[in-house]
Length: 80
Image (cartoon, rainbow, N blue to C red; front, side, top):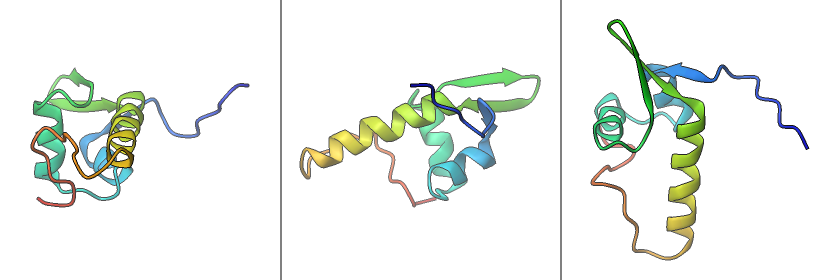
């Protein structure tokens, strides 16, 4: 089965924040600095791959489904 994505394969930091449910700018940069998502630097721009955002969501969904103990690299989603 082929999956078709209507979104571009990379997003800006701001677009990535909304992709993750509207998290704050500081929280997004914590994810970037912790290596939780893959970035591409083009000049002064920081771009994030959609695949790494999807992987982050999948990792944390599986972790949260396992019980109350979850590793989130010190990032509190929704807090900025």
